[in-house]
Image: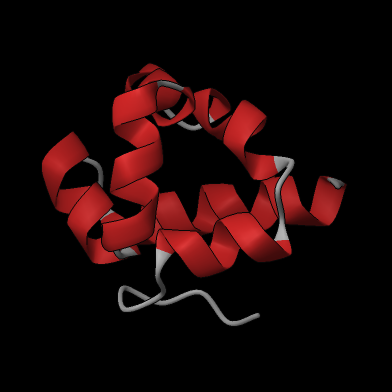
Amino acid sequence: MELTGDTRLKDIDEAYPFLREKLPQIDPKFKIINSPLGKGLIKKSTLADVSEKAGIDLDKLIEGLQKIIEEG
């Protein structure tokens, strides 16, 4: 899967369910993903949305996700 700013978190979560637990490795702010509120965010958000809301550079976010995916 190619990750871009338009990639939906829902699609990433379906393809790589293990990412949900490992997202805090990129930034501790991502601990919210494992909360009930986070589950709602996953359904609606894109990587660009997450990058903006968390204050993390989109390229850094995508790079971190790709690294975690490669490590499995």
